[in-house]
Image (cartoon, rainbow, N blue to C red; front, side, top):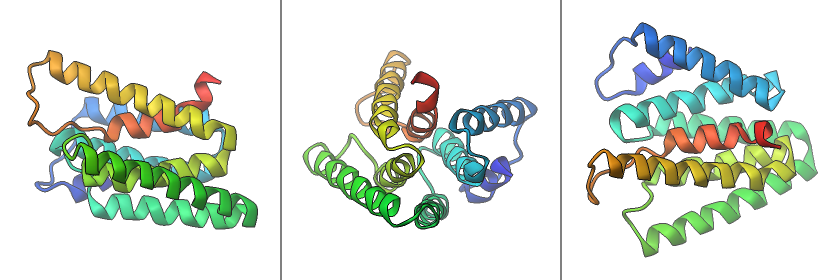
Length: 178
C-alpha cells in the first residue's frame, strides 16, 4: 500500500524495486511496532509514502500531506477533547516556528516540510505528549544528518534537501529512544 501511494503521487509513476519494497515494508513494520498502536498504521504508511516520494523527487505531494493531516485530525478527535486541544496547540506552535524559519531562511525548509511538520507534531502529542519533544528533537537531528550527508556527497547550497524521510522516521521512532 505504501509504495502504491508513493507511485501514484510521483510526477512520473514507476514500479518499485524489490529492494525498495523490502526496505519500506520493514520500515513501516518497525515504526508501527515502535508506536505500539496499530490504529495509526495507515498514517505511518502515508507518512512513509510521502518520505519515499520526497527522497525520489525532492517534494512532498499535497495529496499525501493532506491525507496525513486529515488522518491526524481524525485521530486527535477520536482520542477526546483534551488530546485534540493539545494536538491543535502543538500543531499551531510547530507551524508558527516553521513559518518563522521559512521567513528568515527561505531555502532551509520547503512548503511540503512546513505542511508535514504540524501534522507529525500533533500526532505525537496525541499518542504520548512527552514524546512530542523527543520526536521533534529526533526529526531535527535526522535533518542535520541528512544535510551533512548531502553536503558530503557534493550537493550545493541551492539544491533541494529531502527532509521528509528524516521528519517521518525521526517522529515515529521517538518511542524507541525513550
